[in-house]
Length: 214
Image 1: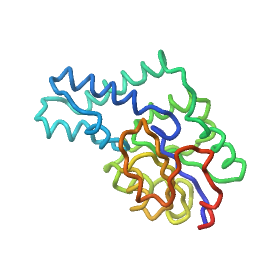
Image 2: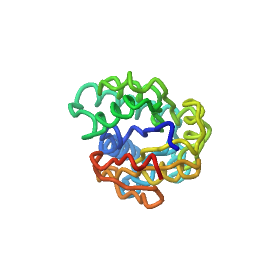
Image 3: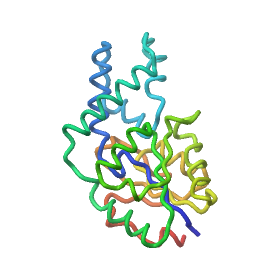
Image 4: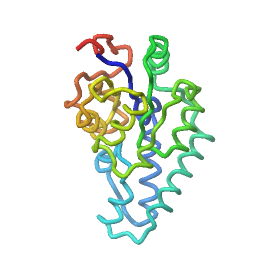
């Protein structure tokens, strides 16, 4: 029986992946590297992009400094240019789950400052007193660490958790943790293979309470 629900943030609550694609592509271009959207889409849901690119392209960069610059550009865009609300239907789902008494956890690969800024901007921060950032962990999705820790935060077991994810890495992490998973097919998250999810939806109107019964 499902007793807690874990939400990814980017691509599930906020349609932010196009923003990240633009910022990261721009930063790499400044380093003399052109990259395709398909290659970048492989890093959706992960927090080890700059470590990987440093090794792959033999970049002489300080990973922490570059990551901080990416965050600075993202927060600037969010504060000064982002006018959209949450992804259609997700705020209503969050409130329904909360009203039914399910503990909610926000588990994102983004840094905690990004998480708090996004949730505040969208008016959803009070719905997620439980928040965890993959940037603070030793491993990145598809490793299950973030979801295992999220289950502990919700004071339940992984088998009693339902995860909502939009990325292949996130779905793999949820399943590796032993959790049920709803894959949200967001076209702006790139070509994500969500077939490992227990259910796949492309709009939150398709969320079904049978997910809690199977």
